Length: 337
Image (cartoon, rainbow, N blue to C red; front, side, top):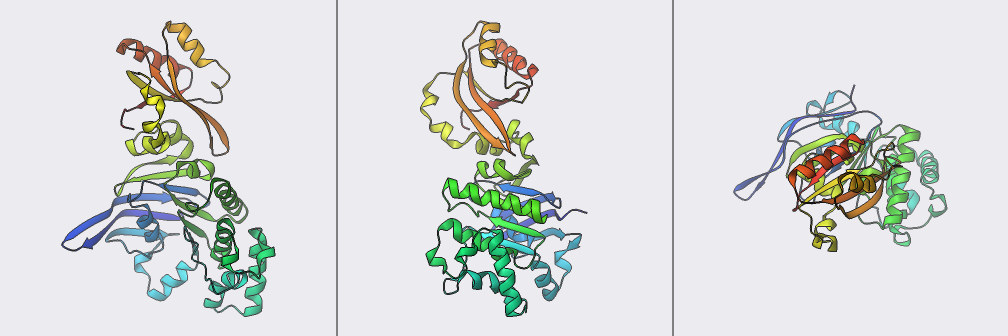
């Protein structure tokens, strides 16, 4: 049985005299134990989608199933009980400034009627899990952004959830702190078996820890699958833009003349071959390297390049075929991506 199943989900908001469709007929399945990324640009609908998973936003049409249970069929009391097994962390942390770190972690336990002594013992264990036990007595104003997010994670784990929803949880953090929070989430997933759904606009977050990804564009689900597969061979324009990074469009490299651009991703088998040198020697034609980079994709180093091919459609097609024969993933790069 799937952990989360979304069927034909549509969400429409009324704005004055207009109906605005935030999500359009979304179908998505998230398996137990997944670290599932939902990515899109600002306004794509991804945050609305994650809020429908725990019914903070009720769909206009369609269904959301959690462990086979249709949330729309539950009473308010039953829904509250179900939500207690769905933790959530946010970009803004949402900590109670007037309460200590321990009291913040205890807060959901108090709401659940857990005795104070038991709640504080649980909070102590959770602060150890997030490597923050020495900050138990301080207040949020005395913490860094990364420390605040660790407290928020501990609080979200207090009710022993089966699912953890992360809505842009690292967007307010610097790159080094982001990496430490992502590694913490990965450890929690591995140790506790919690299904994690990560909402983000950063492909680096997805490639760092997610095993699967869905790409949302203007309310539509345009692509989904294994992170490694989509990284190597993105099919939708939205996926290509997110993976290639919009900085390419404004890079000084764009002034290099290239009639046709392709992106290649090196597999383990092709990483040791001097591919570009052999390509040039084989066809006796120049090839421009417009960009070269290495990225962490699911714990594996993936090399990628943007190549500018020489003029001549026949020559270009022959080069692309030659690259594919060497187990390279090859994707066309449009001028506006």
